[in-house]
Image 1 (cartoon, rainbow, N blue to C red):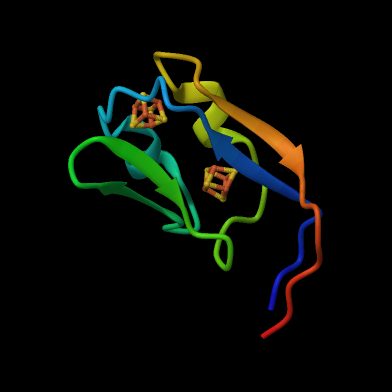
Image 2 (cartoon, rainbow, N blue to C red):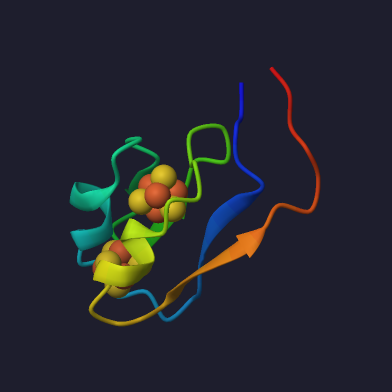
Length: 70
Ligand code: SF4
Ligand code: SF4
């Protein structure tokens, strides 16, 4: 079940440092192939913590384009 109309979005400029991953309260982030942070659409609650902490400032919080349901 999703409870947020917002979601984190990571740009390709991500340097895969992993800082956002440790900060996310929903465990919604993993680093794919050691190259880029990937947001789990099912887990992200749009809190923005990852966006604030990212040292490269490559995460923005955007509106979900569609509503998901489990
Ligand atoms: S904190 Fe920023 S640069 Fe580091 S892995 Fe997350 S999105 Fe990428
Ligand atoms: S917005 Fe919040 S819940 Fe979503 S990935 Fe970032 S820290 Fe995790």
